[in-house]
View 1: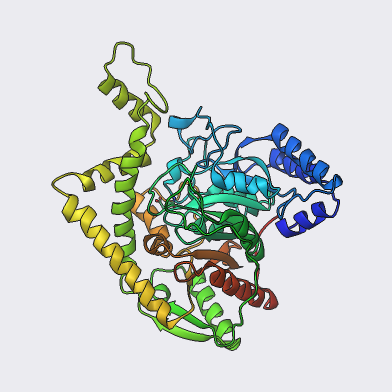
View 2: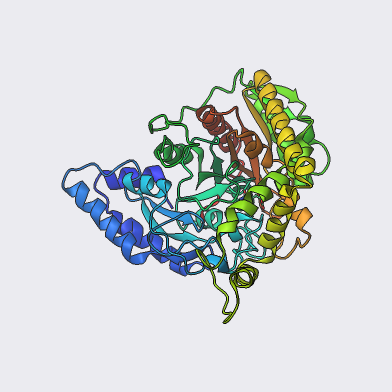
Length: 480
Ligand code: GLN
């Protein structure tokens, strides 16, 4: 399958968008990974025909002309349902499109459907999805990661060149690593969250899954820019993002001590050694960085994220929104309790309980306030690190994709995000790029982080490492 750049160029120079979209729909219908929740055959073909008409009429069709795109099930689209992988919103139809969806469409992209995710984006395996787990295209007995597992699988299986996901603690980067594709989480405030069903509003960001960094930059250029509907979005106007691979010679590359010590799978440590070796051979200056708070990340995240989730998910009461239990004669409190018990899965209920607890009067200072203080310390530690290096590298995940059903202990599942939560806590940009595979041919992911709003610098560095990887003949993206 071609990259988004190639498709847009093909369509902009007279190739048929309808044909591109028809082929994508055919692949999607033949897929067995359960990546797609819903396919928009009719509206996708209508949009593609409109793009073809525009091009024939000599009008411009945009930088993503005819590019088939899949949207995570927690991002609102007027077409189809926005279920967030939950029984609670199984039948929910959004009356509006998220800003990111409108921007993609204005740029000529064709939304071909919605893709499955962990329930309300809570998970690291897409197994909490009410509509069944998604299989990893690299090995169908394994999870695709999560929560944006459907987005990662859709790109890795070559169904679409671009999918949108959301990342609250790693949900773009971790599944990208597990499936062998590129996943980019922009800085907090670069991309509008309007129309993203909120999980933890101070951590959530939307970003693209692609097969390489140049496509991630192309999509990011379309998505970013101020939005009057999202007050946390930096107000500067949208502008395209052009990749200029950075010079590795003299680039200061930070490697956290904590990322190369114990706890990583052997194949992951081997990948890190290989990356360091290649980068220093290419002239990069490798800097040792002490992120002493790295291991406070998961606990800090699980206080802040659950606190915000307990508040955000309060709206799903079976009365104003969401699944309503069949309970004739029940009063409002009972109806609400029954509806929420039926509508939410076990992981979501666990988080609501945890979040409610850390915000309760007796524990607010001990947990929530303390987590906020540690959050600031973590951010400061990253800012300090970026005074000594241009980018930080680490594995995206401590291991490669695990078997479906292989992790049942919630805390073990949470630890998948050891390397990713820091970027959300600090609000900085992060990207995972494929970098080879383990002894079982499962993809390995390399994470790069940069300072707040240094998103372009991050993408340029990722593009250079990608080139280095390709020169060395190391396996890059999957898109079968
Ligand atoms: N795996 C993490 C969690 O379950 C992150 C999820 C996300 O980024 N949406 O909370």
